[in-house]
Length: 445
Image (tube, rainbow, N blue to C red):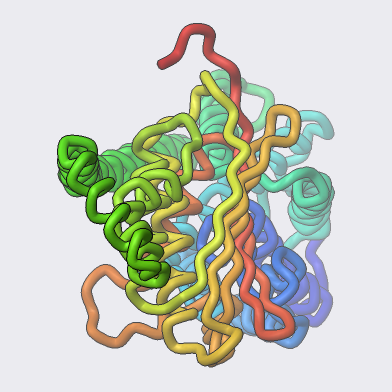
């Protein structure tokens, strides 16, 4: 049965709005870009209501217009993909190419499962009308899929924050199911489906599988490139602090070697009642020892070197620095990943505190173990309110280069341990909190 024109347009317009909204809702649960940004942390991760409304309106307008003009399905699919890419760029700051990739992938996947749903209903009810888009049966099949998809996404969004790996696994499972369903559909004879149409959906399902594979390989390449950069930074830190330790040990060795001379000089000061000079001389002798005893020891050499190098940098900039560490031993957390998180969070804190004045020039680091969870908290004062663009924090640095990727790098490292990095600011204090799940490893050095 053919659907009325206005009813058909209304149905397709609402379907377009729902498709775009569901895509944004789905990606907001898996995309690391913009996670935890904004005041109050995760509460502001999603776009504002008016932006959701604008996205839904754009999807509705594109779908309704394509139906009214009578263009092929390919055009409304492309139009909605562009709309999704635009929204992702505006709301989360995702680059245009990646936004367009997500939009096209989502639209093809939805179209594939819409066809499979219609084909399944057609076989069950022995009617090819479900395969026709402008019939009541076709609209019913489409809305059945959209409602199932909506319930699934709402259930998924209500669970704990998910990592990108989980998103890739979920996408792989979905496209593999679609491919197998299309392959099975080609063997049935109950519902007449044109061979060309079946071949088209088979090709699209294969394209989806290839897209998941390529995206996974791309993310793996980016992760390995980031790890290489972190290893280089780790080696630089180790070399610098090893040199500093050797220098401190050499000074300390000279101190003990010349101990009798120092005692004679101090005795001379005291015998002539020159107490201020004696105290000043003692402070000078104690400086190398004090430099070593003030170091923070977590049990991980690389992390210790990193924390203390940042503490030294803070002292050089007259920034008050305090670190408290309760670090678990023998875990599966790699030093390179800890450096990525600590280094970027402390760099951001020092950069902001350097621009502040008076009591706001401070950085506080706390590392705590809560059962099998490691919590890293960095607090700092700031002079200017952090900038946001599309609900995500934007770097205030203007000299170009790789600036602005600090939080993204920290989130990538935390994501390996089912962790997150959330930020918030209130009362002149900026707070970044990283949480990581860890497992104990017996005998790890």
